[in-house]
Length: 260
Ligand code: CAA
Image (cartoon, rainbow, N blue to C red; front, side):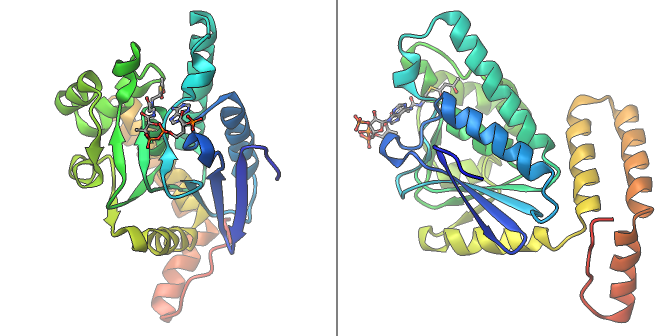
């Protein structure tokens, strides 16, 4: 896979996708959205990829938001179309069969914080900074950003973050649940790698079904969500991987999950 705006690398069953525009603090322009969508689609059907890491190039930013230079002369219709493109990308990541881990150093602002929040696991370096600065530009996080942060951290603080546009440190993001793992700057790569390898070692069937029920539980009423979970559990229990996982436990050996 070759892209203008992304660098892709593979280490065992872990594929790392690096947004590669450090000169613009990895801002999301149309090409980045297009490349990420294509890349995640291809990885979704790649049996050799069992976990995905998403990061930004350079040390200064994960992603500093949507590309303001590209947006400045956009019509409202074009901006809405761009927002759809963004929302579809964030949906893709949520529905990606493999776990997706955001590895955040530097700025994760606006669409960048949103991109991180769409990932399943969010590891951040101590010095990372988060925020929704859109209000300073005369807009707001209109790419599903208000809805996603509401669901993730609750409406009270989400409101303050969106309305003030102030940046806040990784420690605060961790307390709020925007970040799931907080580490010293120098430990970011190692901790990201450890988590990616950990989840890449689990059954792809169980991971896929688990992500599907976690997504469904956000959208369905309580009873329907529970029934959906039960059906997914049944499919997981019927997998060869489940037999392997339990046999391996009893035999006191590491399991070898085939994704079947
Ligand atoms: N879009 C385009 N270019 C950007 C950018 C962005 N979001 N963020 C940074 N850059 C560019 C800068 O223009 C600059 O380029 P030049 O060297 O060509 O001037 C380069 O990256 C380095 O940035 P700074 O010189 O500004 O670096 P700094 O250390 O002084 O400040 C910063 C860093 C605080 C992150 C600052 O760049 C900033 O405030 N960036 C904008 C953040 C923002 O507003 N994000 C939200 C965008 S809107 C959005 O995301 C909408 C949505 O999802 C719906």
